[in-house]
Length: 182
Image (cartoon, rainbow, N blue to C red):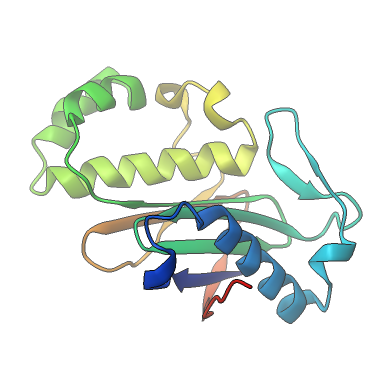
């Protein structure tokens, strides 16, 4: 399966202004037009049981959006897909891991050569999974079957982690887009 990730760096004038959602919508609009020749304003959307948005009349066009730090991404695919990116921040890793991974993984992550990278890898993988399935945070993150479907860690700049998840293996293409809001 082919998938494409549209991404942008949030322009300086929009940072710290809570405009990530609008920028994500702009990426969705841009990608939908370039990849499928469709205008977002004419595509009705609905939400699944746990809130995952989808195109009501376009069952073969799937998308998912994520943002963190200075980046916003939107992935398009021909089947359900989830994406998550996270900027690395100092947090109470052990406390968060207790809610995020099975108990037998906590020490392994905390004692890894790079525990911050190991922590964020688990974070983005699990977030991408629940965004793929549409379960959202209704799902207990510790019970995610890490061998279900296909997941891929994204290559990102230092201090960021990202992952995508789908049912079938995918080949990714990246498309950088400058976003200007009216």
